[in-house]
Length: 243
Ligand code: FES
Image (cartoon, rainbow, N blue to C red; front, top):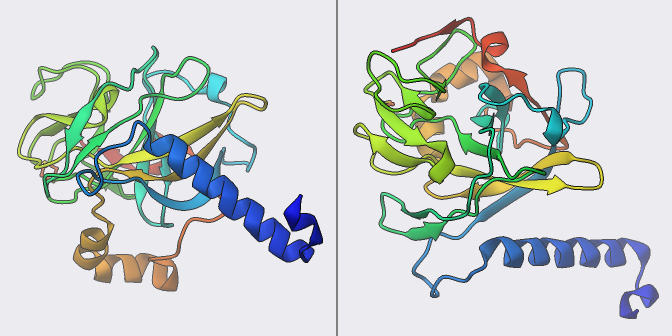
């Protein structure tokens, strides 16, 4: 191989670049016409682990539970959901800026595992340690006739996690941004790779700058790196608003 003659560090970097390009190409296909779509955005490849730092196994994820982790920044929350059945890559979606994109469905042995940014696409409500207005609901409720949706009780935006986070009710102008996941069949491990759809991280950091700085100091905008701990929302958050 050509890179056997290169210094070891250079060869490793080339291999990483090659793998990243392969992953990007695979995740982006089938291709959208150039310039027409919202392209995936790749961040650090981060392994999902439990609170003890052990790798999470896809087949161990309980169905229909709100699991939360932070990605691609240390303070940006995401939902990890096992929807309990295969989730097909069928959704054709559009950002608020009218960019089309195709979401590629669930991952894992059953293709039932999905992940989304937990920052509401309406006015950026998100789960904090103290309170969460937004969560996945397996059953309909007083204010939602839909079951199996991510429901934000702030103004009742509802998103379908089985269809790429598509808006099914409420004022949100675009789907939740999807988190790109990689499942490694040999180990059954899960990794977060990037996002797809309308990211709102800049708006999130601008809106909550003061709060995040108070709570996290210089870590407020630190990129997730290495591993991300996954926990149950009810363990992470003291109060869940149900509606
Ligand atoms: S912030 Fe979620 S519906 Fe308004």
